Amino acid sequence: MSADLYWYLHILGVALLVLAIGGVTLHAMSGGTKHTSGGRAVAAASHGLGSVLILVAGFGMLARLDLMATGMPNWVWAKLVIWFGIGTLFMVPYRKPELSKLVWFVTAALVLAAGFMGHAKPF
Picture 1: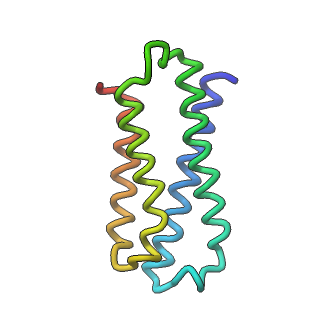
Picture 2: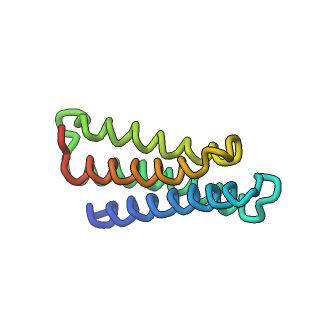
């Protein structure tokens, strides 16, 4: 596969993950619980598929662009930590609904940070 195709799959994964977290967060902010969620299965599937696409396509893109010839760059480690953090945010709104607004903004900030890491490759 080409690096461009990996990039598009990576972005699709980001979209699915953010949609899942956003949906769960808005549902919890509106007083919903995981027991009253009609779309929980769709959100969970989007979260899982998005996470896998981000990881697989990201590493595929790194391999295709030959960016791991001398080991994994530090900015990739930073992105892995950021995406792990974003992935865990999916659980927070139903467990602590009072944190839903914070989850909303933290998710946006972390996505921006991950994008910065991938674009600027600061270290």
